[in-house]
Image 1 (tube, rainbow, N blue to C red):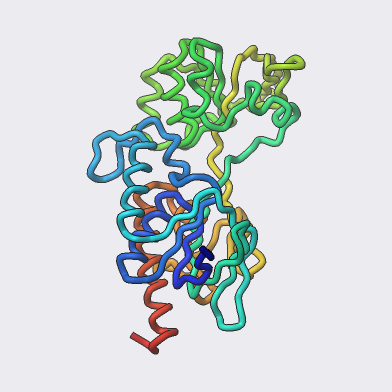
Image 2 (cartoon, rainbow, N blue to C red):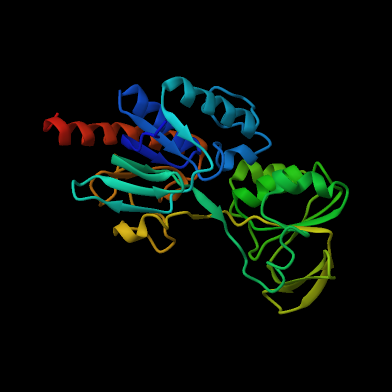
Length: 314
């Protein structure tokens, strides 16, 4: 049976924004396809617990992702996981062509909900020891380091949240931050201060060092006095947030900020007609509830765009 490659709406990315866009697109009666390069869930699936998503006082990230995934299926949207979009082009009719390993899909409108990738320090030894002591996901790899000496680098919500999680797994945990105050939300800062985590203020990492197999230590430097020291660790978690996965948008001339986040208006429209964006790839607050809301708005805007093209102004 030949696969259907022609769709009204294609959503690229299977996190909260993408899944919500697919649900709404299908509910609006659009022939909707959701393409995800890995499996549905997005970054939320790695969270050990979510307490700020309306309707749940507490739910694990993977459980919330599975509930969203089930809802996408029930909505009638088609799902293709493990299907990376290699490129997007504007076709002669004003729609889009999306190149994948399955073939070239065509769509009248596209919602980009590609999220973001882990931000690196780009230091000596970082790549060498990634997967051998250096990690970017505490909830993914933390259990492998139970009762070990650990360090986490960062001072925002990501770092503090992951430090709270790791503090349940080990008695020796350092949080390394280049400033003298954290950038995380006040409420989770207070939670961190109530733990045994030792905060190394005004400190940066210069290098990750180890043997032929594993990370063994980190070279640290105090940014105020220049003093260097060696910190022996079994594992180091880099928690600097994410960089937007906006590479598909660049060849289309989509407007972005210096970080590569896509500019989208209140209707999640980009400067390219028919192309909408939602979630962590957009310049906005990085929260699940925000991503879901943007996904709904993007699908609504896509519906209006498609119907106007087909029938004239609504």
